[in-house]
Amino acid sequence: MRRKSKFFVAFLVKLTTQGYMKVLVTGGGGFLGLYVVKKLLAKGYEVRVLGRTRQPKLKEIGIDVVQGDIRDAKIVRAAARGVEVIQHIAAKAGVWGSWDEYYQINVVGTRNVLNACKELGIKRLVYTSTPSVVFNRHAFRGVNESQPYGQNWLCHYAHTKMIAEKDVLSANDPDGSGLRTIALRPHLIWGVGDNHLIPRVIDRARKGKLRVVGDGKNKVDIVHVKNAADAQIRAQVALEREEGCGRPYFISQGEPVVLWDWINDLLERLGIPKVEKHISLPAAYRIGAVMEGVWKTFRLSGEPPMTRFVATEMAKDHYFDISAARQNLGYQPAVSTEQGLEELVRALRG
Image (tube, rainbow, N blue to C red; front, side, top):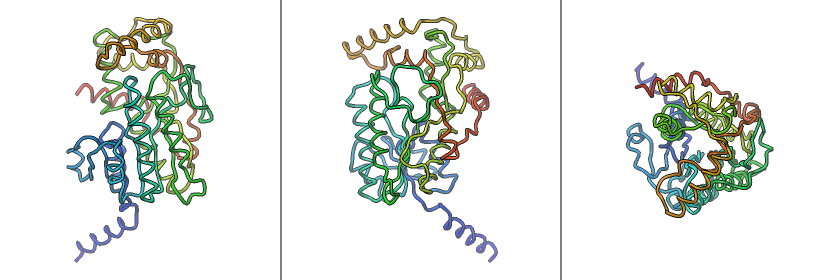
């Protein structure tokens, strides 16, 4: 009897908390998405994932996985049926590819999510955006969300994410009776499980193909993946409380790093020679322009080793004011940069 009583009490506790709120995570099998899924589970939410692959590991831990493409409106609607919140993380990232592919995934895919929210009466949407939506080829030093959207785009990723973010924020219902939205702009997400940013830096450094672009003193914002995931959940809670809706938020560690010092610190901890050779920004920019032309002309696979966008980002300051996220979302980076580095180095060393 005592055992049954404990079970019943536990059942009631779960029933009266958020345990039966279902959340759809698009791109839930990706780097950030997986951390968001695990954090949602730990907080008692039911989770469904929409992704292009089968995600057997997610299924093993009881996740409802819908396999399909974000560009397919019917699939998105089916995945969204019965959920109360959508965490829209899926996107085509990177700096190289066709306009059509970026537009279809990042813009049309997001519009499919918005339409599903409208048709199914879903009232909360957290959209994972990027600081690149304000890209204008200039340095950013502590700017906040009043910074206007970018122009003179050098990559389709930034351009299409800007269009999608505007769509998401325009869909916010100001009187609170309809869809409520928030857009998050995490910058340079890194940590254990990263299969894009850090591995590429390490690979190029080991091959001696990495160069410091510019004077090597530029400061940039970064954000540990656990902090980025925490921001996603905090944004969801803010939507539930009808607080801080209809606007974007920059997300970072709260303190910029000197980019090349940070990279060299990581390399040194891994026993990899530091990057000491330099190339000026004008030279890297010209090389990027030439490589872009070659890749387009000959339709080469993969990304060019250098592009104009990458040259600009690697040489200039770009860090942001996260006061709004702290105040409206209660965001506070819990994992310090040093803690994150130590954890990452341990994982990379195996």
